[in-house]
Image 1 (spheres, rainbow, N blue to C red):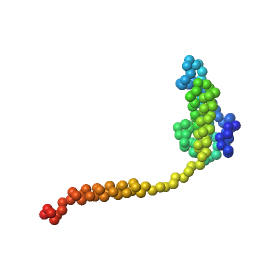
Image 2: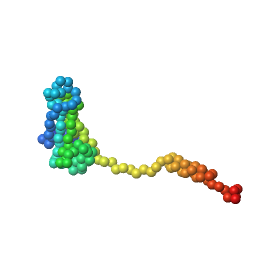
Image 3: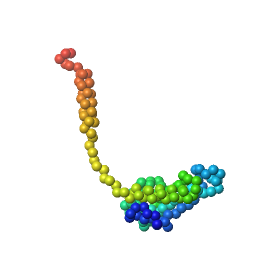
Image 4: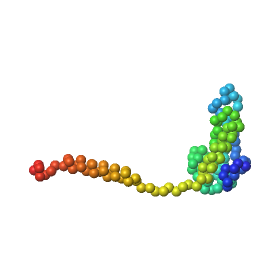
Length: 141
């Protein structure tokens, strides 16, 4: 069991891991040892995650979620399988934690007073320029 938040606990049987050859660091071992981890977590069929968290996670994960609703995380930062495995799990937990936070509603704000004053001043300036271009009919008949 992996504890994500106070209310969300992941069952490890829902996580599938596959080890593949990494393109990162590893020296001569890189051609022999599959150190990169491809972690798959079935979001759509997971019983551990509440619906609203699932929806936010699918939206925030974007391309990492397949059409079948499986979240794929690849970890290849380290040279060992175990550290990459832990890195992938940590990232999964972090994604779920962020999705579990409630979305704060946006508070509407108006434009700052100073920017409004600048806009009006530039309009007045433009008006003066155009007035100066006008031909006064009293002066030039």
